[in-house]
Amino acid sequence: MSIIITAPDGFSIRVVGIPAPQGSKRYVGRAGGKGVLVESSARAKPWRAKVTDAAAEAWAGQEAIDAPIVLTAIFAFPRPASHFGARGNLKASAPPYPSGHIGDLSKLIRSIEDSLTEAGVWRDDARVVAYGMGTGKVWAGATEPPNVLIRVEVLR
Image (cartoon, rainbow, N blue to C red; front, side, top):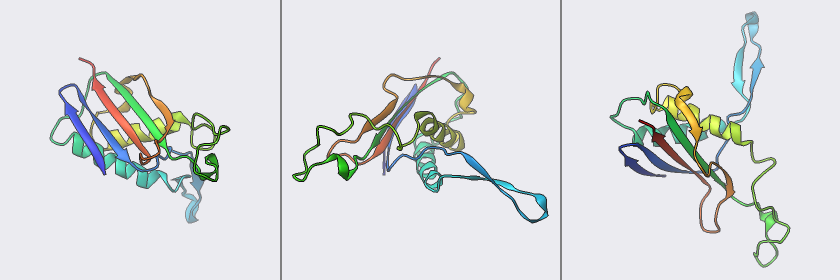
């Protein structure tokens, strides 16, 4: 499920699901000496497909952007159960930000950029000239599902 808001200068979409980083590639050898590069993360492909579909729907019928772009992406992750006490209250020791094993921000952004390229939103992710204010990782609210909020702003 995604929420789409379009505007003349771009669009915003919220894609529900646990964000997955664009992982590293690994080489898999094949008979005959020809190998292929395979995505290390099993979660990356379905996540990217979900973002690609939402972006293609948001940008349907419009030409690929060939102008400078500001990309904003706010990744909201679910808190692990270990962050909560027996009564369901957030522990004082729970970290305020999702850092560590959740995925590095640059790989999360790369996943989004590749998805938007595949969706035909822009000609090339090289058109991204800046990341918008607020780009980063946060914990999803208590009643909010994990998601990413993406804002594509065209600079004219």
